[in-house]
Length: 333
Image (cartoon, rainbow, N blue to C red; front, side, top):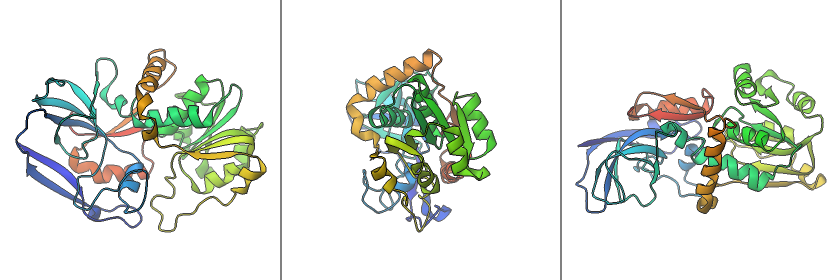
């Protein structure tokens, strides 16, 4: 059996290009006792992938040159020599951008397509949803009546953050790129307001949407938007740093200039890395599943087709902001 996979060919400078990747097709080795063979169904497309491509210190080691690109995925067990897994079961895995993977399954989590669509286990019930859950509830610590601002509000994490904040009784203001995304955020996700950062007058529009100031800011983009929100935070505000997608492909990334607002307002800025909460994944997923079944949480996802070879162009589409909700690449429907 042959396996097609995407290898990191060179580290990007700025936006990744086709030269960063190498497509390779190899013969799969024989399975050993205790192993399972998984066929990839869907691959998670995440902004964090850009950071994994850099040779720099981070919360996780970089992908090495010549190594299969790291990715979370949903796969189907098609052969098993491990009594814990049966043929036909579906699992949440981290076997990378490839059509097949052989593994002992130590970190596999079984998922049930009869309860939720498989892509939902990569989004709202996967790493992006868990990031939203722990980032907002543990670091943001929302209280009923507070104002929560979320950037990247139409994306995988931001869309969940805003909905959880609404469940907790907060006023929620999203920031997104384009009127279509703002309409989606308000009409389908239930945010109280959404600001199109591409329309100009960013500070004025945020201030009007947040007449009582900003108590919690969940940041997915960094750059100018973070700097602007920092000028509008309240005393004891909490800033949750989840990502900085506006800076990932910049050759000269910039940090916040208005950080002294943290001092003036005795506010707190803290980062969220979902892996720190591994022991609590189950309880978080269970609570969010309950919200979905109760109609309180929309588990939208955005599917790109094309198989494994479409991965490089799909990643670029993510950075171009073409998706609403969680972006996944369909490998084998």
